[in-house]
Every structure is written in C-alpha cells, then in structure tokens.
Image 1 (cartoon, rainbow, N blue to C red):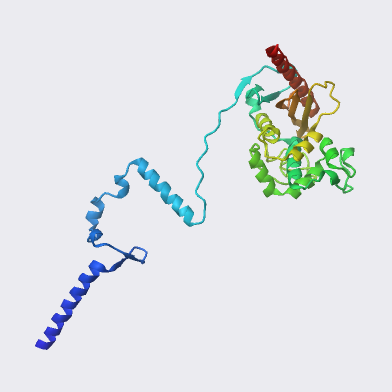
Image 2 (image 1 turned 45 degrees about the vertical axis):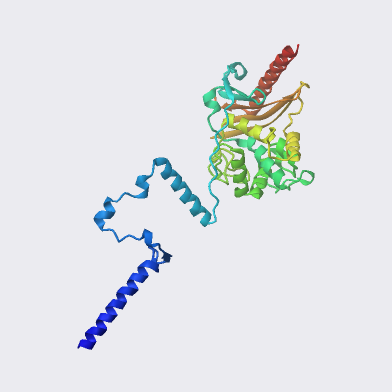
Length: 362
C-alpha cells in the first residue's frame, strides 16, 4: 500500500510539473481548432460569464472613425484573400453644366414637345419644356445610332461589305423589300436590317455599351420587343421600339456628346462612318452641317413619340441637340416634323452664336 501511495504521489507531482511547463512554453488551440503560439505575458485565466459581459470590447473602446477604418481594413483583407480587388474610391461628380430654360414655343406651333441644345464650349444646356426634357420615352429608331456605333466598333458591320439579303417577306415599307446595305438601311430606317445586326451584337455586348454610354434606363429585358402591341412581327420589333428601353431628350443629347465629343472613346473611323450616314442631305444653308437620326413610335395606331437627335457643326463649333414631339390632340405628329423643328432651331442658335463671336472679335 505504501509503495502504491508513493507511486501515486510521484505521478501527481510529474503531472503538475508537465502542466506548469506546458503553460510557460507550450501552444494552445484557437476557436477554429488550429494550434497557435501564446506568450506567457498575454495569458489570462478564462473569464466567467459575468466578467465577459462587464468587460468592454475593442470596438467599444474605439471612436466611430476608428471603427469604420477597422471595418474597411477587414473588408479589404477579406476581398484580397478571396481574390477580389478592393473597391475603388467613389469619385466625386464633376460640376454640372449650366441649364437655361428657353421659350421656344414658336418653333413648335402648338405641338407638345421638348428641345435640348448642349453647347460644350459654353458648358451650357438650353432647354425648352424642362419637365418633358427629363421624361424618358422609347428611343425608337434613334437607337440605330447606338446599334450602328456598336456594330462598326466590333466589325459586325463592315462598311465595304455591309449588304444583307432580303428574306423575301413583304414589309409595309417598299424600300425595305430588297437586299440593302448599311448606309441605305440607316437612311431608310430599315428595321429588319438592324434587328439582325442587334441580334448579332447580342444582349451582353449591347448591355456593356449602354452602360458605357449611360444610356437612359439601360433596360434590354424585352429583347424581342413583345411589349410592343402595335406590331407582332418579330422582324420589326425590339426592346428599343415602344418597349423596355427608355431615354429622355436631355439624356439623348448627353449621349451624342459622349459619342462625338473630344473625350469620345470610339475610333475616328467609326465616328467618320457614322457622320457619313447621319449627315442631313439637301441642306439649303452651306455654312453649317447637321447630322442626325429620326425616330417614331406608335401605340394603337397613333404616333406617341417622334424624335430627331444629333449634332451640328459650324466654323469649328459643335452643338448637340434633341427635339422630341409627343402625342398632341388635333395635331399631326411625325419625326419629319421633329426634324424640321430641330434644323430651324439649331440653325438660329448657330447664327446667333456666330454673330456674338464676330461682334466680340470686332
């Protein structure tokens, strides 16, 4: 018995010694079951539940600014660990151009509509009917500027080999019932031609372009244009024709500047090709040039949207414009009328600008 007690005492002493040595020089397991080193100076006995509740946390000792910085650092670390780049700092918006409201009602002769002229040299918008100028509507065939731009940049439209074969289906517009090339398709606003082009561009590439241009609501969800109850021929419908995609007259003008302005990301060749097809032919005045595209949409057989969108140049000066006409009782609303109003308005604007410049020089 005595021998057994002696052995027990020896074993107990040995265990105590081992525990002491482990406490000073050993390792402990963290919360995930991983071995981690610890220093004797930082070891504390486990806290009771009451002590843990009473003890202030690190976050409680930090100021709100310090907490925010700590959270940002943790987020960036986790993103880097997951192979994701840290978020870029939010850029401060640049100064907004000046906006001047104008009474251009005389040009519209009782038609419901809006007009926007953006003069980048003056860093100024001149706007008629501000509320309507900020209201989004279907772009209709003015969207052919965007589909042409994208197709030219990606090589889907090759200017020297742009003929597409007519399917043989007879359309309401006789000029569409034949093989047709890009310049003719653009000027004749041939819907089936651009329906094919847009399908070849595809939703993903088109969405990228709309985001790049900050184009209206950027909504391509009705790709085939089934929301267009005015027409059920899928060769003649799409998201840009009285469907999911919408844009305001002011936004149309801003998009024109993004395409043709000094900071344009598009190639000079693409811009040149677009200018060629957008040039308004048969202009009576030769001291300036107007480039643009019409667009018109119907609902239940009635014209509800009519556009002319583009830019004009005179003596090295460029202005971007948009004229929009909406449904008006007892008035004929057409894209041809919108085009006529736009050319008169922009012509007067440029003449006045040139007169001001000459007067300043004299």
